[in-house]
Image (tube, rainbow over all chains, first blue to last red; front, side):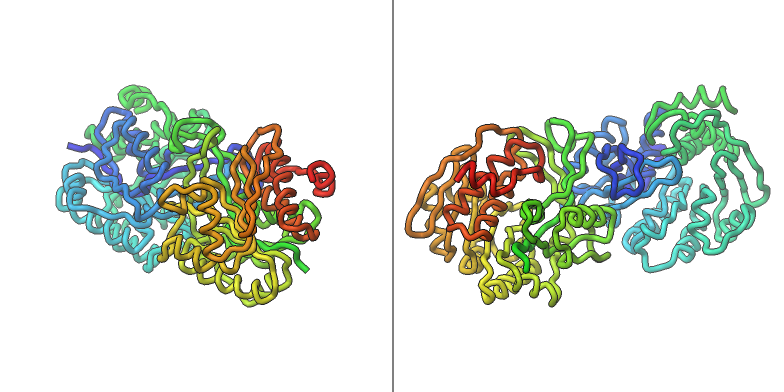
Length: 307
Length: 307
């Protein structure tokens, strides 16, 4: 039994040491395990649940590093293909106090490949998670749809991160058409306002964004508003919740922490709103620390403290 | 009039800050302008001669950095294509006191492309330089041959760096066959003993290596022996020269410094052996400093000091 399986990018983040103007001027970088689906799998594993990743990396030093790190975090890596066909993805990030400039070098994760055994990983899971990255090439989209069908047929809960960015999109179809294809499978979508402005050409208000996602077939929408908290909608009622954050040291991975809490809430049987509140708690805790992967308190303590 | 033109890779070196076992364990990297043909062009320009590079880079932050650096060093960049088709090459290097582990991410420089105007750059030059990197894809080999023909027809002196490594080789033909095709154009080849062991499957002695290169059609061979100096052969006579180095701080770019001195010697009209001795002096000076690009004394002072 696997509690959680991510389908998507696991990669290397090269984060600049200096705060300079423009990535081209950064002179020194630190290397980290990265990729949002991977961060969530690590967070969930660190809380004592069984998590797995389905992805692809290169047979290169960075691929070796990724496997070593994931093994240390006790994440199941049987669904990670490592071969010579492509190189491990790298994202260079300019450290910034606002929205960071990034430059992606994508290879293996643009070419996600699935083997028959990967279907079994999904069938046995409580939750299946994927992001826009897993839709961002024709091959990835095709494989995501295959896995979504298997997940749906086996009553696996499905979460989708609509973190669409034009610079990462290599798919023939437009994002709107892909979303229409995907949404009917999705139990939880968690866009930020920023995601919405990237997805939709015209600016709309919060309720309009939420309604479109529901129209396209998604069950629950969690629209995050940064320091203003989040809005939860099950298609019948829209409710606003404040952020629990008191102290903000670093926002990296705060969205991934929210997902982690939401999914753990779901695994332990909370209703969707309570699960989202546990996500809110995870996110608030993460904001106190630097880096995407950090030592968040045990979820049982967070339940007592926040819910 | 251009004194020197390089055809080949200009790229980013990411050099690890830590001395660790294995590139995968390196946690922090510094970013530098790199690529042997580019280092030579920069060295020659820093000595007051006109140098140019023909190469390809990506339209990305690292490509921008390269152009900015080369402009600062006064290197002619009209022969550098920058487009969206490919990304700027990167080589990750594990800092090491022996031979460093490296991991190349090649894209733009595997796809060197030449425009008609690039032939004019070569026609106007005193010297044309290229390396095995510029032969290491079918497309690069084809374009190198075109440029070699133009150089030969215009009495441009031709130097070739046989820095062949199997890991970088994507060409359909084997290295030996490519060398047989290339050698008749070449006035100077400067292999190290290490290069020879990579090129030839069987170990041979110094004289045997030199004779094979001459048989394949090259005019002058400079076989470098590290701390033991170098051997010069014009096909009639083989002469050994000791190294001038007294102090070794960092060997990075010592071979490129040798090339730079050799070419400057040629530009100012020294005979091949004297030019090689100026190369020996440049290399000895470079060894006193850290990094591939450093402040080597003016060649006029080096002529007085060493020759």
